[in-house]
Image 1 (cartoon, rainbow, N blue to C red):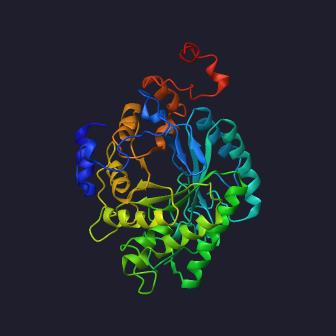
Image 2: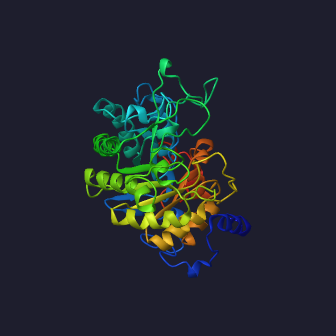
Image 3: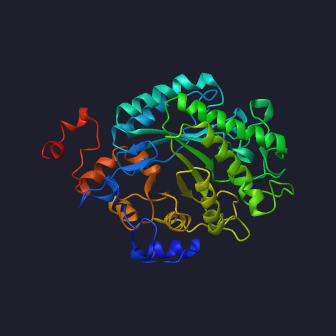
Length: 399
């Protein structure tokens, strides 16, 4: 990463620029790393799971389901990146309730019938030495939208055309179209927490080995955290403690529903990028509380609470958030956002800014990016690519 990009994004995040030796917690990736080996190819142990490297496929909505069921497309999507060598593959935002989907075409896990098709995907991923993960989600006020390939992408799906009433902490729309969302009652909030826990149990039955809670990007979990979206006056609104209540209760319920050896991640929008919104200070504080609830890693993204945000998008622009949470909350973090170059990714780990690199669009462009990184960084680990390909490649035969 170029120093100027780091400085620019650090200033925007309210993160002091520090030298690697002054960053404190976990300055470098050490556990399981051989001397001289690229940090990107050191294993990562979280509870009972060991990732073969520090490269993860970030959750990316495929908008290709019917009634929430996985199909051949989901298998192909995951299979390509598993064969390509990534250590962890996290399935897209998966609805814990039918009304929790972003679109009618989103993946779901709100009923037992979803499990067998998902198991088909996780079995293949595991056979290829990758770890299958899933992101559990509820879209909240951003639900019931047309998928991006529709003639009117992201527009509200009318109730009489298969859409449904969105819900949120407050009767406040995110956009200008669609009905005013239903403000959830306390009893309804607790039902959704139960839906997350039930979905976590189904995730284990479906073969997933890592579970992530989606509390970012303006969806339901984030909408409770952000003062820009949460205008409640009861125990779920107002103060920081009240706005964080839904997240902490849900994390606690999911942790209890999971086996002890299954890691639990939380994706946060670490800042709203708008004055008066959720901040990096809030994210550090809530990350400390999440660590006490048994959360194992914070997946550090940003934004999504408002369209007014001015986000300084550029290489590594979100890395300072992962670095600060890792240092101050004493919890492992994942860095995401415009990380595209192997040397760039390795430096983030080497300098103690994060523990895991999550990649989205770059793995769409290059399913075998992990193999390219292995070659460019000259790793001595086994080639991160399927044996059916490895035997034919000169660089894997010569080592």
